[in-house]
Image (cartoon, rainbow, N blue to C red; front, side):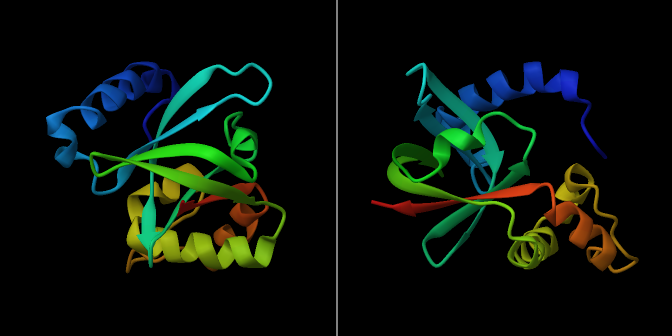
Amino acid sequence: MRIPEPLFAVINPAMRLTLRSPLHFMFSYNIMLIRYSGRKTGKHYEIPVRYIEDKGVVKCFTDKRSGWWPNLRDNDNVELLLRGKSTPCHTSIVIDEPERLEQELKSYLNKMPADAVYHDVRLDHDRKPCAEDLANSALSTVMVIATRL
């Protein structure tokens, strides 16, 4: 089920508060806060996002149309609030690499099939992502990669 966009105005502040609290364990196994400053404005941001971690590398996905990811392009001043702990990180962006993004998104959605709806990817009867939809989604997907400093 896709959560309607207007509800994120309520959900995101509540999620930020929860992830910063001792109750973070309820969500922090797959939702983290990305903390960064805007490159032009210097304004501080905290964005809750779903993530996966593999061999110490944290990955999350968003749409090209979202406005927050350009600030994370080759950025050493990013902090992740990951499972209740603040972690300084370097972030990089993967964009306009459809083959790589298709494979990465497939791996992600195999672990997080409930997120398929946010990437316009249908799931088959085994809850595996549809290959055609993955290829189309990869064209508009951005992957953020975070590595600990």
